Length: 144
View 1 (cartoon, one colour):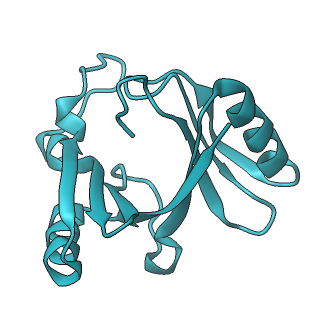
View 2 (spheres, rainbow, N blue to C red; view 1 turned 90 degrees about the vertical axis):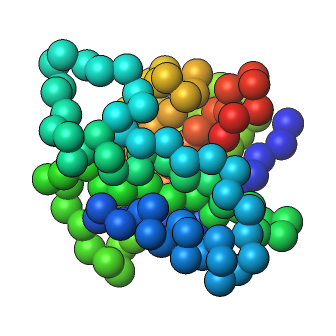
C-alpha cells in the first residue's frame, strides 16, 4: 500500500496564468489542464460561460515533484494566504476512508468522500488545525 502527497494551489480565476508561469519559472512539464466546462453539464448546477473557462484541475511535473492547481468556484471564499492545500493520493479506497476519518476528527468536512468523474473516491476536509486536505483515489488509468 502506498501514498503520495503534493501541494495543491488554489487561485481565483487566474490558475492558467499561474500554471504557465510556474512551468516556465521552474522548468516544469505541464501534464494536463482541465476546465470546469470540460466536465459533463449538470442541469441542477448550470455554469456561466466565465465559470466554464476556469481551471478545474491542472497538473505540473517539476523534477521528481508534482504541483496541482485549481481555480475556486465563483462565490467560494478565497484568501490568498489559504491558497495551498495538501492533496493525498492513497492507493485504495479503504486507506482513503481511514485517512479522511482521521483528518475530520475535530475538523470540518468540506466535501464528503464520494465518486466523481475523475476519481472512484474523492473528498475535502479541513483538519482541526485549519489545513485543507484533498483525499483522491487515482483512477485505474493512472490519471491523478
